[in-house]
Length: 457
Image 1 (cartoon, rainbow, N blue to C red):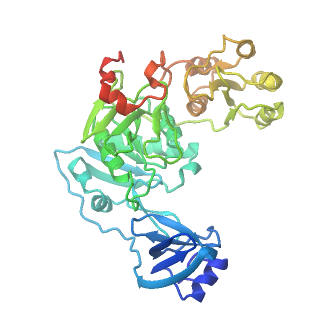
Image 2 (image 1 turned 180 degrees about the vertical axis):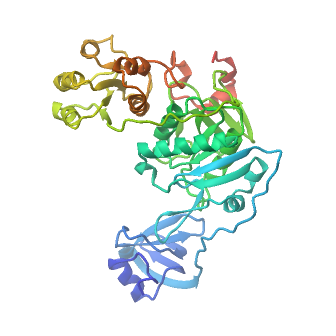
């Protein structure tokens, strides 16, 4: 009976057993407020013991509190099959050879309801069955590098990815796609931007906000758009995700200026302090900037050494010295502060900041407002921090500052050189000025009004 009610426990399991209902049964349920019909799904081991879960006809899942069910009736059976049929991915000598590296996430996967995890759809044949349009854009080779939730991403994984990309590009691959969970995609995009600063082909990070079993999934279109961008003449690390909830185009974001800005909407990724590098629509890439690195024949080299002992600390009211002292005591090499406003922290933590600097720990200031620049010469607090030796981070996002400092500490021993390079634009992370329309831009409005053509970019 345990397999017949896999994942169920407590009141929900007792209720289903009493009514002789098993997983994969099609059921009609009457509750206090609404009636449902759908397939009873397995649950994962961490699910609440008081709920049953069904998949509705529209493919959405709903959890129903067992105690609210007045009547349940089995009306059929339909077990889900998650094996994706394979079709041979065709080879076309006139199309570019791309490689897709998988790290996890839902963009190239199907949901496994038994475990709550995703099943990779990752051989070329599986992807061809799932997204046949890919074969009209490229020849595709795939490799699963690791299968992790993106919140479990670590610097050593960035290093592995950089080396994989170096090998693939230098063996003749003309573009790289990286399937990645969206939560930390911005961190990985920044890390690879620095590690692959001499890149010769496009490296495109792509994910999806909604899994491919859902009717509103963005997975297929994001994959198609990423293949188009990976075939373009951009030789940078970029993120390619939906630009509109209408699923009509994708946006191309520079890897050091991009951030996930909403927990669930499909067009969640935004370029900060600038407009996106470009867009992809109807399998055509249009670039809004001319100052991008172009595809070339030069060798790609991965500079992947990274100092992991760097911390990112958000300033907050009531922050005490012991927080920063903790990292000093643990022999950290760098601290990135996400300060308030123009780059401020409480004067109450000056002692620990000064101690960190005396221990030759580099302290970089960014702003938690995300938009705008650090301006530490404006108010007395900023000037005092500058006098202590805190390095202003210009417009760098806090996570980009974290990645850049860790990368520079891995590359150089000379602290003065590291401080100089922190304030130098290396791969598009520092801009000269914030474009006025960049704050909360509405891409649809900009496209409709033609403002993008009038910008001096």
